[in-house]
Length: 346
Image 1: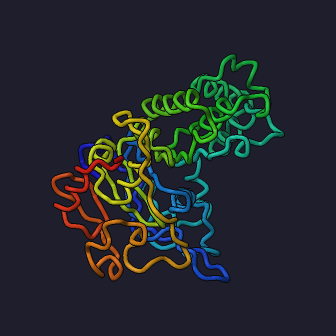
Image 2: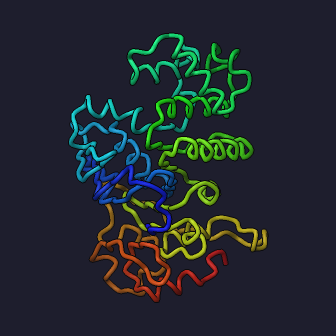
Image 3: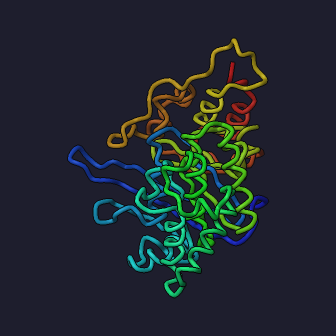
């Protein structure tokens, strides 16, 4: 990703990450050779269809992928510590303190048997064992204020079912940020919310990032959320990274055929509502038996123009000039530049 989007020190470095899950039918290669980094104050969006490896990447960063039952290779450094090689007590110490995660469903992320104040206070106490009950309550009240829960003095003693979906998501964000982590991973944080509440949650995350200086990874399938909330974007397909670019570059000049397909599937205000949306033919491949060469080849309408190249060789990530994005495609720079000039909604 471009140097101009760097806003602080590097918080997370992922190098050549691969995650495979052995099954009776074969190895499910959920993530395959993914590399990226995130700096403080920066928001990275990770997009792609279901099954592209987004959530597995996130859970592995958090140390939630059991390496005894999964084949995990590569390197994940948070604050200079390699998560994949650190012992469990070290990873537990980082989780919540240095890195935290907001899960997709706030109702299942919260414990229905405990008040929201207790849950925020408990998350704080884990990393501050000497704090008193009064201190935990004060911290919880402060976080409820920060995330915009009205009347926090009363609501601190209420239970998750007494809150709306948007308010529950705010509480989950409060729990994630209570220890001021350097890295926040938000996995589809607005999926089940209506568009008004979505906008409120995104604005909340942006304002809290400015206050705490956190690096954020936002995982989503919603390109509208990406356009609104992130600095850089990584597009994933079948466990691989297909394209990396600043959000402006990605929307103005998508340089990978898969990204172009995703963009074409979104209604644009520049086009008549009567026209049909572009669709990507076929379905994502099975992660047990990926196609040879480029995994997007069977669905790509440009693969035939390159003969056998796409079926024989996995494309490496390279910079596309003069666009500046990184793309994993066998098309040469001029072909990719020409690709961005096409009307992909026609």
